[in-house]
Amino acid sequence: MTAQKKFSRLVRLIYELDHVAVAFSGGIKSSLLLCAAQEAHGRDVWALTVNAAFFTKEDLYCVHEVLEDYKLNDARIPVYVLQEQAVSRNGRERCKVCSGMMSAELARYAEQVGAEVLLDGCLKGGKSCIALQRSEKLECRSPFIELGYDMQDICDMLQAVGRGYYIRKPAGCLADRFAPEEYLTAEKLDFVEEAEVFIRKFAGKERRLYFTDWNVIVYTKKDLLEAEKESIGAELRKRGAKNVMFASLQEDGEERCL
Image (tube, rainbow, N blue to C red; front, side, top):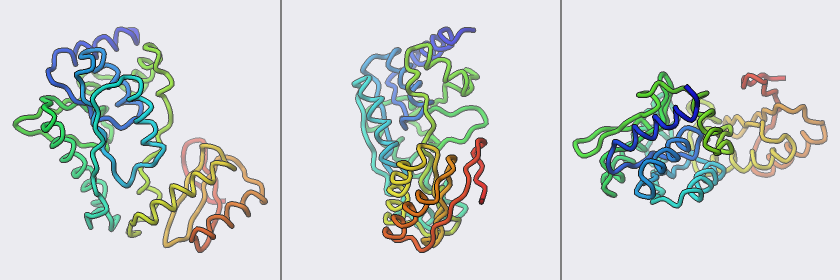
């Protein structure tokens, strides 16, 4: 089956649903889902986006960029995840509790705007940051799972409908930059986000920080010059880092110390 036919199947599935909202993150999967929902229902679709401390400005820009394409009803829903101790303590329950908080707010807001169905971009066997919840008034559906589509199908469909520019590597959750049990605060999250923006000037997009008690490891795919390392180290120490070390980010995404 061609990518265009797969997209048509997706549109037909969504067309058969009434009063649809999309859990929209600005990522590849939810961008295609929003594209199909708009094709099925025009501007009657709601795009609902969680705004939480673990999302970067880059994430939010991606949301804005896609929404500008469609001019749909949209809402940014604040979720104050750091106020929950199980999240800010950054233990084993962080992801589960955080996802639950975001799910509850998405479901609450979807019902508030009159949605009867909330769509998410989950793939079979995959992990969703938004573990959607069901209620008596709201049905939650995962069209990609129902149709058996995988990530390659999604990328092929985006290319087929002229939205290939939505295919990009996600920034990832800011909380994943921290050592387990590292207490999370707005100050630390801002430090990591701003540091990665600064490091990009030297290392390009393929860079990542790891933070533990204000000691940081800078992972880059590019081999940095000593002068570049010195500039990065000086800047991060000026912003509060105690020690700055450098390591290699491999092609497979693994982080390996030098």
